[in-house]
Image (cartoon, one colour):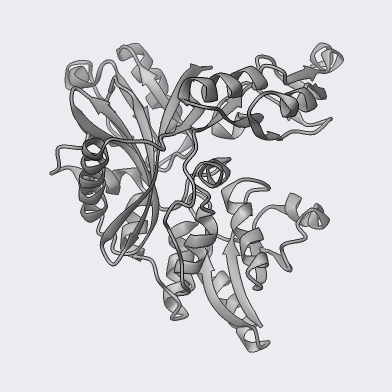
Length: 410
């Protein structure tokens, strides 16, 4: 039985859509997960044919499990992950079983921000940065070039543990916080960059860079975190701007040594130069796959799977229409009593899709990471301005009602 093994998944978003794509393509799907909740909610994953609870950070354990699947007669075609921090593990396993298609060393560098920054250090696209050892102390003078700046954990994902620091006192507070949370791990401090930010979805094939989509991002500074709340797929670009972005992306992927694989790159345009914010060895999560499919007619996770399986794939756009993905967060914490306005949002002008994450009884909180964005609206329009307004208008219909009694009892 032709089988694909997935290392981890989110309940929704790009990683889950990849499993659904594998199911559609006729593969037997196995999910190796460390989330007991997914085992308890097994019936909500009909596209997963076999789900196994295990330590997905333990290479030897996973290798042993996969060997047992082979012994039982399953024809493993690839091992893959679309989830933060598990892409490298999946690549190592795929290589061990002779199934690897992606450049494993490049994935390893991309998953660690220190290694990624060091790989980029000789290019004009790297922001000024410094790696701080948590067993050392630093004075204001030694950090004067980074105030104001950004401080973060090298393993942070989805805006977790990424902070803007305005002064030395703020630095001291955040540095101590990161030292406590990640003992023994270094910390990155870098210059704060002003300018518009874009996300570029990329697939590299034999060293040739394919720009799948350029997505303009709207960033909100909420609850002391940088939360991306809006994504506009730029379907019309001038030849000059496209070529400029492709040249920069080519240099970035080459600096990381990527010959084959998928990644997304976040960059800011600062004083006429693109600067790398971060690079991740997978398609962006959340609603990104739906955004690309709605705007370009391309199911990127499905085509990435085909590439990993050494099947025929097609990365070209089938359509081009303006689309915008608008997220929302909450302004108060507590137990969710109900969500209102979802159907009104669905009926709003230009709306293609509405997604609400939490259910009644779930705990919702102020945003501490991208995982605390609780709903999104995907919309289109005749042009960019109308597209964005349609999405923003529709998302305003959605309201999260928090149980006030829960707040009183806390």
